[in-house]
Image 1: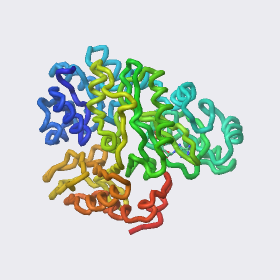
Image 2: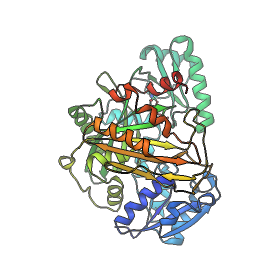
Image 3: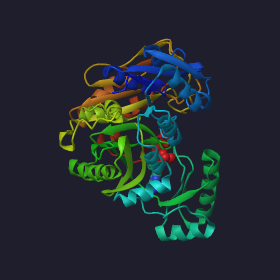
Image 4: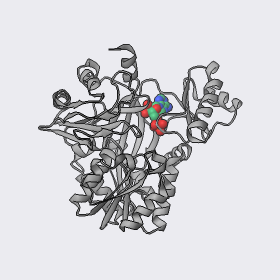
Length: 448
Ligand code: ADP
């Protein structure tokens, strides 16, 4: 097992990883930008190193600085969390070359899943069902028209290097396809420095269902069930459920086993999430994330498995601590993402938290790194906390979530808590009757 883990991240996820290390008796090193000197992960770590100025490119994305921090502190492993360098194959390679373990999959697995066209090809080879679409990049006007005709309208044009929902354009008819193709290309070029795009059938009313997998790089892999993350705004998840309102246990096990078998074939190591759109009883692969996800706590809650603990274990060379038969599912869990944002305009709302009272009580978990008096810096993602609630049934979970959201107080800044106070009273949400477009429509129709 590792002696000392450097946590190359900030905010709630840095704290989440730090907690797992403490429970395993591993020393922790926090790294931080000058803007995060007072952050909770810095305060609670055994050691901390300042790695640069506020801008992420100069600190949390600054590989030489992080390597220097490893060297100075003698860390023997790095946990990248999510975002920042978590899916950077080059970073994983450099660490390995310096005899520091990257707590995550191999650079090769990060690479094949990082590029979406390669990921889709790999998925097909592994027997994972995919969205019908172009075989590779769509390179010309003629090819765009021809491919769209073959797939059938509406079609979606997506950036190969995509992420965060950027570089995606829908074409409803042949009249839109060339414009959609060229705008997707220029958006992709601007956002990712790569204008390669591909085409998929655009699904009208799908749900976003994802499978959590864990492998040990020694040929063992399991699935930890599915999460429903259909409530999204601008392709960003807002509310996630495990235990799923739509997916029956047999369906969960069927798609879960397809994914686990694929991971066994790859000899995948660490945590991963295979994302699907789900429509009319069919699953369609869209991408795989080769890292820990923001929404991992809902899976932890219904399985009792500590995913970060497992990540650290397998990275240190141990086998998975469970077999598929030992993975059991209990009840229902929901996570809502508390962002420092105006709940109507979603404009970021950094500033000082003047009063903080997190929800508590039976079945409630709060993953956050903020505290009363904490000043949220304006430089990073606006996620400041996650409220995770459990119930034996989805109904019990919803009642508890309503109680917990009403109880939560964060003053001094604007947060998305009022949005959840409204959502938790919406009949469609209570009935589990929503797809990936529901929230956008709701927000457009219900200006408060
Ligand atoms: P990103 O990496 O940018 O997040 P994804 O491929 O994961 O891109 O897609 C993000 C979201 O875009 C999905 O959760 C879904 O809401 C929507 N989406 C992606 N592909 C399709 C599709 N073929 N049809 C309809 N919606 C899609």
